[in-house]
Image (cartoon, rainbow, N blue to C red; front, side, top):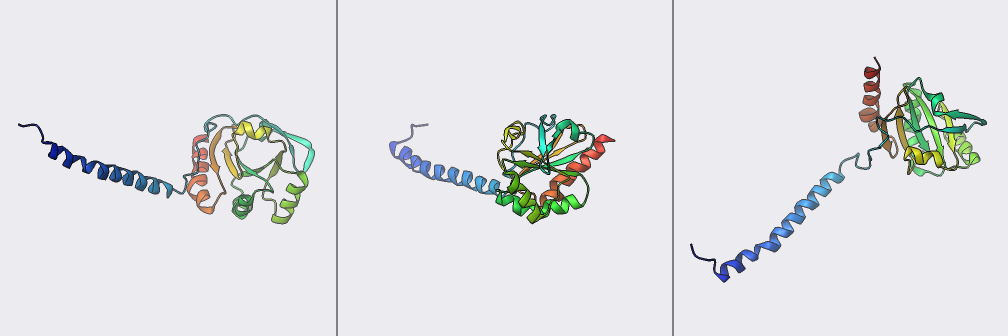
Amino acid sequence: MSDPSPQSSKSSMRWVPLLIVAALGVLLFAGVMLSRNPNREALPSPLIGKAAPAFRLPVLHEPGRMVTSDDLRGAPYLLNVWGSWCPACRDEHPVLTRFAESKRLRVIGFNWKDEHADAMRWLEQFGNPYFMVIADYDGKVAIDWGIYGAPETFLVDGKGIVRWKYVGPLTDEVIRDELLPKIDEMKVASR
């Protein structure tokens, strides 16, 4: 065989830019397809499968009463992080209320970095779906839970183990497709 001629090398080099553009197109297409994942904002929590962080917080409706993480053990619960300052919490509220009315689990409100009066006014205006609301006024307990926004929701089993976390407003679809199957898994595992 003979060496490729300079003209043949030049001819094959013309395809390099086209190959680069094609590769970028494939990456762009993959990115678009991944962005259609409705759960793309879900971040894995390092708490999944581990004990819920210990806490001792006041009850919103009884500021002199303190509740600890140990007090909540014995039955599963849904911990919903919310604040009166959170517009997405307002969108989530009717969905959360419907779920709470199903009485599948205790729904514990985790009022985060809120003013007491604002939180009370918000619940009076939109209704209180919570079994109990605990208040993390300074946000220190939220750090232990890895909370970085509201709303966020955690499913904790009766032994105090975090089983599921959702970032963003709960929707009927999220409850049907993600939360309820996790609750069923917990029931099977506890038998």
